[in-house]
Image 1 (cartoon, rainbow, N blue to C red):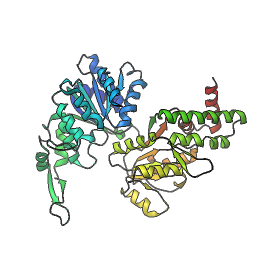
Image 2: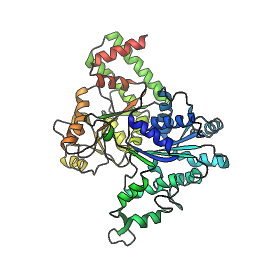
Image 3: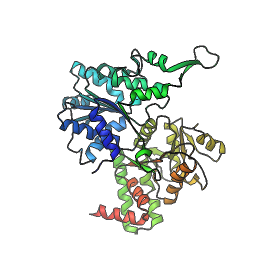
Image 4: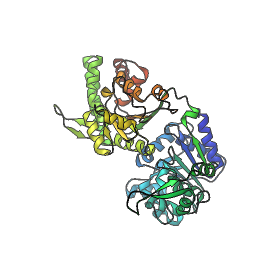
Length: 459
């Protein structure tokens, strides 16, 4: 395999800086580049292992182990998730791997478990905005716990994020403290605040205030961080005439996988007996698509049974990494919509009212849920954002292209936005989702894709 030039820049930055930030857009392969950087440091006999990767639960449990196992350049490294039951955690802690991953919620427990015998020479924080609220005498308990070892027992510290300051420059102080202990932005948040911000009263309440950056703040802060924080913007390295595709593969929980396997076997058996006819095959596959999404409609009913939340958790990670940037989410089934609205109260379903579309384009809706058939010709959604998530897969190539066109590169460029379009596919692993994406990517017929899949399963 071959890394992109910008990934080699990430690798070199990690090698050159014991403590650094990598600010790179989602889907650009910063986790792989980080692993390569760690491996090269190990080959250079730098004492950097074992490594601890802190990330949101799904990313820690599935994404990082998958990255290590997927690429020939990293497959020789051992990797394990340190979470689970107390017994599982204890067993994993007794036999550390090269790369050890953990969700943020369990970090205080990990630090307590090891005490003075803290073993991790390198810490990678995937989505470092989780550290933005840290203050010397307050802040989240997870960041506070990490601060007790970050500078005394950790040799190398790498922060990864696509959006380091989603709510403004004040988000930076907590993150940078873990890199330099306050050397660049001040040893306390109050000092940082006094130097680059002014406090303004909001409304009649004398205690309601907000911080406003002074005119010189942006450039001065950027200059101070330029040596340790590497910024990688997709538009500087990749052509923005085409969308940047990010496939997020999520494994189903074992019970859900068993349900899916049973349904898929019956589906393929029916196809084999009856012969394959495209429209009929697509209709029969709906049950498999439903289970992949996390539910199953009851027979002859609009009611459904929940099966798993794997895709909802994946979407949560995408929204979190976007750090406030608006996200457009395409769904297929009414049950999808209901489950999405329940899981994400801030989300808004697109309707026929012009006010909703206007609110989206004005940046007032953080997550808008869209059914492909409602994305008609001429509908312009590019002003609201440049990130689209396909939560549900759909055999219809027309629907797929129609939704992408709503925020697509052509519309972005016509509207004067110099930014790439990110397309995220959430795919349930080892399910029909992967066949649907194959159909959409290759533009082959449903029939051809299913026939090939059937032949593979018969071998």
